[in-house]
Image (cartoon, rainbow, N blue to C red; front, top):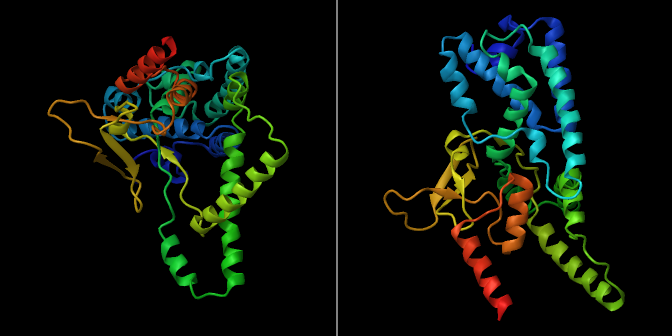
Length: 314
């Protein structure tokens, strides 16, 4: 049998009863509709269990998948005046997920993994995954070939196929806009865009139409791959707004590829950017604080903050 979580979850493994299999499906359904990191956390627990069941030492199996930076998931709620309310919502949601996971796995795991399945252990595991997993989104490998094949196709066919890309992009935007923590945090920080009026609004709409037409030409015909994963070396890499490495997912596999962005001296720490580092200092710090729960004090941020302070004092 294949290594990993399949050793526990597959129906032929004998680890889960029929009732537990149904409970696992309910757990996954809840995760898919409420917070998909829950599902990955459940898979990590099952992977640890599978490796222990097939001979790997308990401490080694746990350490390999859980030794990264971690905080209880509710504590990672975006800061602000209503942070307490957001923490309470996360605790309730985590409790629902944890109960479903226990229904599926209690009694099926090897001895010694009880802490991972406890509320505290599960909370820390979900928080860890939120902090260290890597976005593995990448374009569909068939998209370029399909676009080339459509060059000579009728306009109506190209238009109809283009609608798939538009629907997919809209679904992604809708999902991102449903993040209550981020929406509340941005509202508290006054991030809502001011309403435009008159000629300015008309001009903005005209610019939007031009930009939309440009973007439409670049849209993929086929939806890309959406997902994220736990990659050990990436999870151990610290952030910098002036990174010396760029880490991106491979187009054809689930691997990631690291490329140096500049010369790296012997003994110099490898760093990556967790966000879009082309943005303004305050935007970068806002995104890191709300998404990763730390105020960035990398050399670039400190230098830009000092420059802003000096200019403000003149």
